[in-house]
Amino acid sequence: MSAHLLAWERGAGLSVVRDRCASGARKVGERGRRLVMALPLVVLPMLTLLLSSQARHWVVEAIATVCVLGGFILAPVLTLVAWVGMMVPEYMPLHQLSSPFFAVALIWICAALVGAHVHHGLARRQD
Image (tube, rainbow, N blue to C red):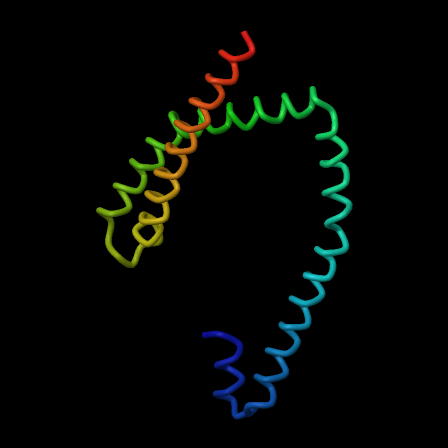
């Protein structure tokens, strides 16, 4: 049973539950502020890295490799796991995750096809 329900059952009242929700909201707000403060520390080095043409070329090659390997190798595996998930009982987490697995596999295979096609066209254009 959750802490909120236990507090309510003990007769602590609505104020305790409200206080716990407010403290949770403060924690989320603090995390958001930390994330916003750390964002320039992540974005600026990435932008500096992408100013170089060699770095941009390397990043594009890496993304194309991830798309192709993921789409043509891991997407079928993910589809098989999703099919197995459809066969298990409904209360199991794998069954509940099977639809998102199918969607991710479909998106990944489409990204792989588009990425491989674009990458092949760019490589042919450079020759």
